[in-house]
Length: 405
Image (cartoon, rainbow, N blue to C red; front, top):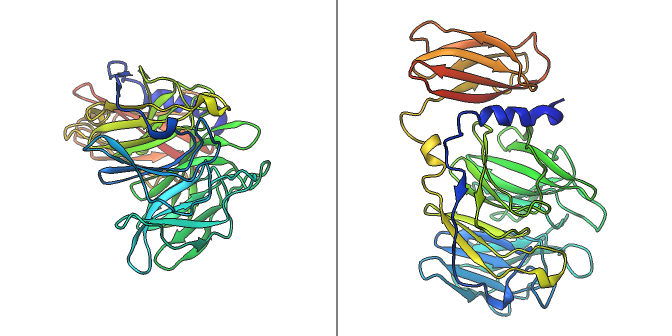
């Protein structure tokens, strides 16, 4: 029931945003080197963007590293003679080794032989030289990657041409150790994003169908929480983080897909834009700007894209989520194991309504004037996702998601 109807909750959370900005205008930047890239590993380090490996018009697998200086607006070749295995659909993350070196860790790339790169390969950020290699006992291409508190997380991925994994593994660069954690709710290739101390896995592909799931992992409890499903499946998207929002750019099927997911409220905002359609691209958010580059439009190398674009998104999302006078609504505990939770109400709350996954009002209340909290009893309701919507005396509305376990 949750997976079937949770898109209705996203629609409810989007209510009241009809007047919000729904279109973005991107500006073209200079072309990518070497005819472009798709399926490259990518990351950002302060004012520098990296792309590693990926497919190109001439070769399906590459080992070249490129760095983009945001202030100069130029791409340069990264470390030469790195010894990287030619690869695509890999992962890259920053970390500090036991020796104190700041390294780019490159791993989980797919190779021409069909299997993933067997180990961890590194690039030294400060010297521009190749770094030491480390073991990767369970490599999986097209895996998600996220970094929290200096630890690198590998999420799902493809073990062979036909086998996908639900494994979540954590690598400590400081100790060169791997730890297996609670598995993903489903085996698939996916993207991983770290926001406010949690890891989000959004969409993906399991070899048969694409996924619309949104799940969050809490390192403090080693548990996954199902956050519902998107209105449509999504895979092969590029991702970037802006505060509590996750930008998603492109999709394997709907290549002009452009959306932002709010990790606090579950709200999904979709946008139209002048960005050419793509999948398997790269994205980054830096200083209020959303950068998108590369990707492809078909399975052939000839469809590789060599363009780079930027859009000013500094006021697109923050105006609704970070203004000091915006109403704020929270529930605790959430999820609730017994159906009892408490709402922290915004100032001037007039009405409270609770909707189920079918959009039906299952509870309503009018808190006393000046109330700052309200007990919420969902014990009579079935397990699932609910949306709590509050209206204030000055006509504003705010929503939050509550999970009844």
